[in-house]
Image (cartoon, rainbow, N blue to C red; front, side, top):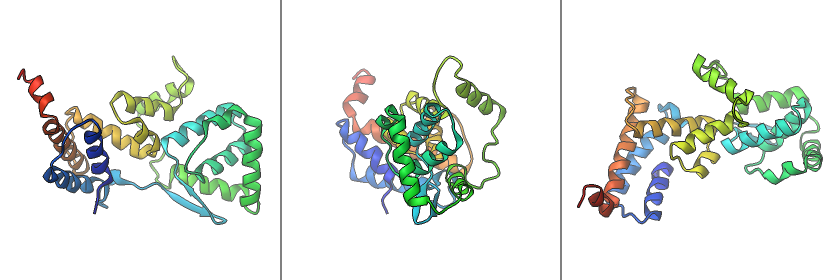
Length: 239
């Protein structure tokens, strides 16, 4: 079995001109699978999926979350329009930001798609389906510690900035050096896991099983990176 996480990291090293030995490839793959494919590992959650009238809806990635946040601003949070937009975005893997430059045309396009594909379902049925993809059925959903809630309220209120909650999370990830494309394509829980891993690289001590597996992977990755660029290592040691 191949770990996509390990493949992405190894390809990143190679793109930068580094050399990874076959032994290190196998080692990282094994440790990566412990994170992404161990069913007991909580951070390896797959995006939620639901089907209605033959249309498949998926939990949005961060870029889709950001798009929906901007759409809510553009359309002034009209509930019926936002429900149609959410349905359209969650049923399509990619979003085109240029669509929001012509909101009336985009609204007509979305409305036509909803009528053609979901015209026979009730708004309540569609709302339940979309809410499952957005929030799941976890009783902890939306229940955040005080500090996290304060942070989210600051982002929503626009204090000192105009960024959305999803955009704030993306910028947080970027500030930690997380690849922007990977961050945009991740779901919100997956990006949270990536941010957690970035903190682990900075040696923040965490002890439970899930976090230990992540720490082991990224400590090993850091060691592999050092050996992949021996010239840089020598230079940093004054060689």
